[in-house]
Length: 158
Image (cartoon, rainbow, N blue to C red):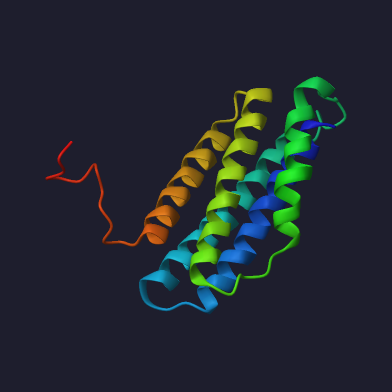
């Protein structure tokens, strides 16, 4: 497996994320619709970033990476991420839709960190990881309810 293979997986993850969030935005309204539209747009921007990164690796695409180093990332993609991407249907409940989105965001962060460990000087990838972490936080807040207790808010007992 080459770095372009791993980046191709990342591109597929972002494309699927765009599709999923777009579907959620179509069946949502108000602030929830705005959130899903924002996430879909972010995923589309991430896909474009991965396309640009891939262009930079054209000359290196034939250079295989050490199989031991990419073994974890490959297995993770095949066993954890791809099954979730195959099922791009929106769950019937809002809560389950959010849970699925949270799972995919977590999986993406783990996978992208693996790529980063193999190719450490990808600043664009660092930015994408940070944005995926923001997505994870926004979705978690939405899942827990916007009025839920926040231990970091002003006036908390901690």
